Image 1: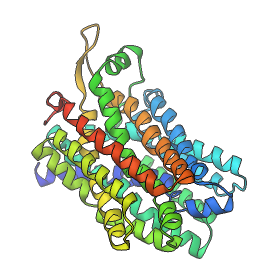
Image 2: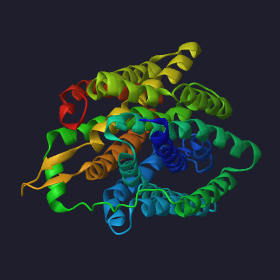
Image 3: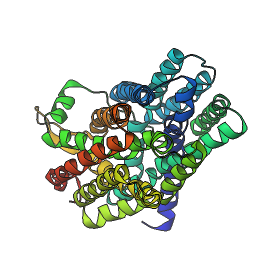
Image 4: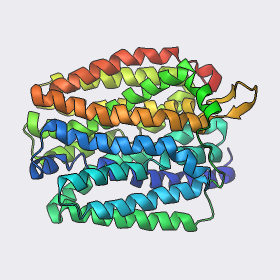
Length: 400
């Protein structure tokens, strides 16, 4: 692409990435806050991990039904609605004083945040030429990596200078303001989404490769978000670190992984999406298992840093394959573009399993043994699943 043609595309990508960053940060901010919340509400590890199950459950239903929203309003307005609603719920969460209302607020936060992803990815697909789709997805995927870095820093500032409730209040105000700003801009995808009509959904759900992508995304989210969610508890309870030091190490580990989605996107275009998906899962699973095995402080820091560097490389290629699921022949012989619907069907299940169920299982193992053993079991599962990526026929959806 020429520089003149690329500039408006890049500006649009950066705005979408900024919105995705806020959307993601609102959900992962509770990971570095988990040791404090566990102490304040007198929770065990499994109950603390259930916070992410609640967020993921709301995310599950929201992504699954997002098409019914975006088909009535366009993708841009759906993104605005998601951002504004998530900011408002953060304001409400900042006033919660009981465990019941905190859990209800986390479920609602997942419902609000989940509206973004299908419309955000549809906007990226619409904005970026198909030859550069993997790299466009890589730019968009910088957002959650910034969120992983900023969340522990924000949490540390909250606990150091005010309270986690006041911190959530300021984050909510920021989200509402950015949502209003995006609504006032002239850009954004004005197309309407597609609801999950029965014919198209059945065509996608009948594909064995679609369910394989669901499994791969579940493992990728588990190795990234699921491990991240429970890592502060692992560092404080199993390794004896202070919450402040654990937050700093968490931020440093994600800082090292910041540029890796760009590397993953470039490798996906060069080597093929199938190779990148399988290789990144294999290495992320190995580092996760070794993280639970290590007893040396030096190697602990090494694996904490390496693990997310490999895990995040999966997503540009994974989203490129999933979003490009198009040209399927439906029962009636009609050709339809189903990339957005494939995302709407895949991501709810993947986030529920990888970002919700996995932290609870790791926490449950931690209550009966240790969180380190939970990481070992998780790493073994990711390694086993990595081999399945080579059964995805990426030739149908772009590069191999």
